[in-house]
Structure formats: C-alpha cells, structure tokens
Length: 216
Image (cartoon, rainbow, N blue to C red; front, side):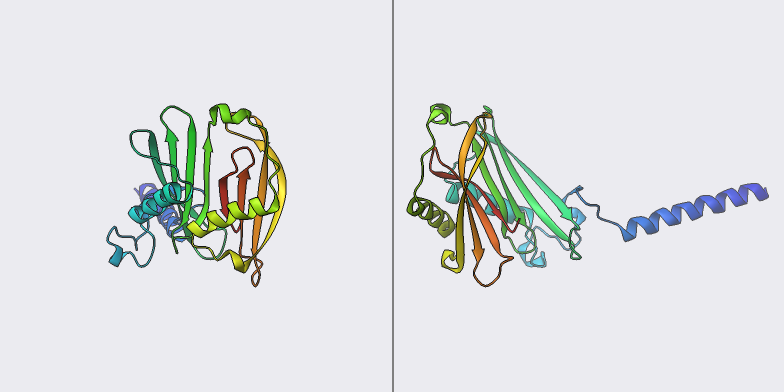
C-alpha cells in the first residue's frame, strides 16, 4: 500500500514538471502553428491586437504576386499553402506567415513571407519554367536599366528608393530547370540606418525581378 502511494506521488510529480516545462517553453523554434495557437489572434480585425491575421496575410501575398510580380495565381492554375511559424531568434516572440503557390502543371513555384507584427514583406520569389526563354543568352544590363527595374519594383511596394544607396553585383546561380543563370543582385541600404536593407534579384535573361528579401 505504501509503495503504491509513493508511485502515485512520483507520477504526479513528473506530470507537474512536464506541465511547468510546457508553460515556460510553449513555442519551439521552427515549429509550424495554427492561428489558434496565438491567444491574441482573431479573424475579426478589430480584435486582433494589431497582429496580421490569416485573411490579411493572404490578401497581402496576393497583392505581391499580382500587383508587384504581375503573376496571376488562382485555384484553377495553382494550389496555395499557408503556414504560420514562430521564431525565437530575438528576445521578442515573433511570427511569420508563409504563403506558397505551386502550379498544377509543375511549371512554377511562388512564395511570400510576411511579418505578423507589422505586415512587412520579409521575402518574395517567383520561380518559373521559362520554356524557350530559358535558352536566351544573359543580357549585360546597364546601370540605368538595373535602376529602372528596381525603381519600378520598389514603387509597387511603396518603398522610398531615394532613401537608399544601391550597390549592384553579379551572381551566377541555377534556375528552375537547374540551368546556370546570371543574375543581378541589387542591394539597397538605408542611408541613415545600415540595418535597414533589402536585396532585389534580377534574371538577366528576362530582365525581370525574381526575388526580394528584406533585412537578411
């Protein structure tokens, strides 16, 4: 009888310790969450405590694809995936919405990452099978051509490009078909805040932006 009581007490103690551990470390790095895991979230904007909810994130991502990259994605030609992830890289708990699309015919993959706290676009990309265009030779874009492409892209994101210094470099990477391709990496750094920067990647064959990343 005494042994059973001790066993029960030990079991209870273990369960209590597990519970405390889960409370102190509710969110783990790299784990995907649903919106319900964040207690302050609500589909009603006025109750969301200023955090970007799922509907808003999808709306932002759709604008980036259609309004910025000028790519029309819909249920008929692609499938959309929505993920919410947590990061503990800094002392402040942060969350990121990741919206992805995959073409049904396998000819394209697209994605947008959005900061839940302020709706900022962390990154966006469009990777497509260019078909016959993939065999086009890389064009030696002039500085004024690169600047025109980046200015047109940033205007759609409502970025004041005059507040940034632009540095352009060449990069060799592989495209959707694993073909070696020349890109222009356009790094813009805020003139008054060096931590504020973004990179725009231009495919020199199509003279179009294929990737955007911020503060990475």
